[in-house]
Length: 133
Length: 151
Image 1 (spheres, rainbow over the protein chains, first blue to last red):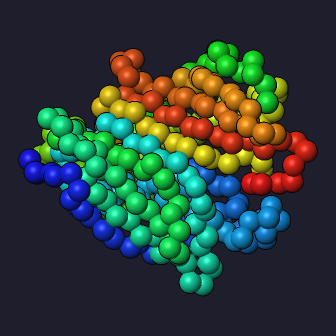
Image 2: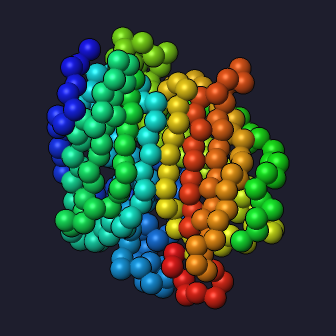
């Protein structure tokens, strides 16, 4: 069992999303909303560009934290608020920066607080993953 | 927005069999490289029956319930004006390959916010034995008819 202390940074990673990442997530999740892969549709509904699925951003943030924890650490609760979209350029993609810090620890579980930014902007708030240890 | 949706009864979704390759496919899509998602032996060594679905995987099953909601003729929810505002998963146990899961939709809250509406939709997901696995909670922000498209 890992010793976790409040304030510890357990993981920090920048993941690069491309249009391929979005198409891959669309296929895996079944969310084929065209704003996640078609520039013309995104523009027609007034978006700044093709957006990453919010659920993809939520998913990768958890992945970064779980990679830093023991395989047996079970997720008991995971919640986020979506604040800003992640625009994924057709040529340059988008970098998503994830910082996972221990927010609270008790006898049986730990709360991991996730800071998730793209282009220096916070895209998820109150992103908290609670795991049983 | 139709507040009569709160408390309405919906049928459970058809059973969804969680396949091992589906778990791996989903894991790759969310950059989940922890071994319990991909490697059966590692998952078993950590105490799971098979590979473990990443924590956001229940969205695949919750989506079936959101389709039920959108297809209610009186829902007042138009996808093009709907924004996903919040999402949460509350687990009793992890999902592993081999699970057969059924979701039960409940609309638990609707409140007005200016001309918009916030709708809270819960999917209670149970296994073949009827035991609770996870509840997926979505808060959707639905724009009013009079506004421009917000997507």
